[in-house]
Image (cartoon, rainbow over all chains, first blue to last red; front, side, top):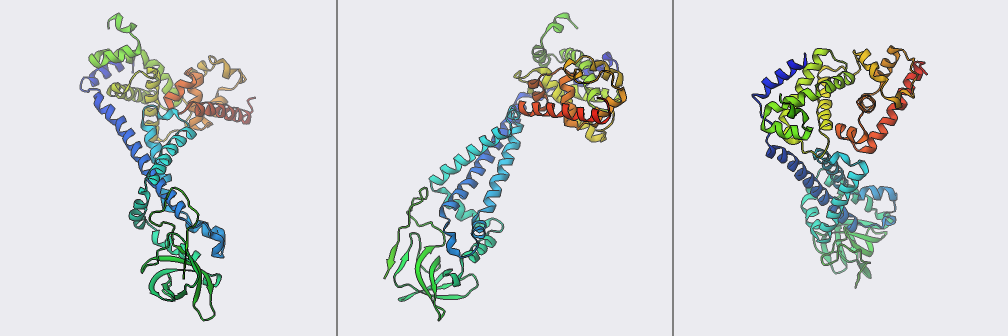
Length: 247
Length: 189
């Protein structure tokens, strides 16, 4: 094709064409920025729940009597971590769709996205919203029930002095719990320290540290909440245990 | 075409083309040959296919004129569209590893880039050099061609390939090393 031929062919074709309007171009980039912001926002929400989960986690894994690594892996909020990672990747994709996003190298864009999303997550957590997000959304996530069951199995070790269960009865001498195996435990609560956040009401899930008695009952030394999330506690700061003794 | 149009800068021609479509043909004439050479160097297609790709490139450029905002060089933006069209055409034909057919043109330009030829033995057999270049991974071949045959600097290469500068520098270094290894393997050094 000669130069003149190409020019003529182009001339003929552009006669029926029009450049895309500027608003369409601007919309495309505006959409990329918007979707980037949405991805960062959602990643921030995921981070806020991850931060919250780390705040309410019981880090006293040595009490489980088992492998500390197993306790660690049972505690990690996997689905939220996976969501944060996926949304970070999505944010990167939309960043590359912007006009100048390609100028950032891996560490620059990763740093920027993580800084923004994690920072936003800290803010959401400080405002106390991550509790609501966790309460409403976590149960809907896949494998949520399975992870809860796994965590219960790690922490429920009666022979090692650890029982986890839901309170099904309150008696003058103590409590009655049902564990994840539907076994019932008689918990004796003389001189028991109750950690802050432990709600001793029917239906509440608690951890009981103590000693398994020969007759199958369980003497409680300490009662902890299943998760450290007592109302009124400042969820940003990790306060030291504030308990009371049940007479 | 009036002479004054030929004196306009690329950016001025773009603005003018948006008002008068015929002015776009000045852009076509200005860049047709450089882009034709670039497509031939980058790909392994026939002359007819080069023309097809070139036509697609200019039509795409015309349709997206409002996407050019002047913040990067017009030639970089043009090369970027060309690069993407070549990739699209390759994906349709799956001919990434074919040997470029314009060997003479290819080697004629080999004499120009002194920094690369300084590293190569100038008595290399045409077939061996061609094989080595064709043996490079595409991502290395494309940066070598842009750097040493199209004469683009790192910033322009980054704008064309939409990669950060650090990545461009790394790719060029690795490309040169891989090319040297392939040439050594073919006993050219």
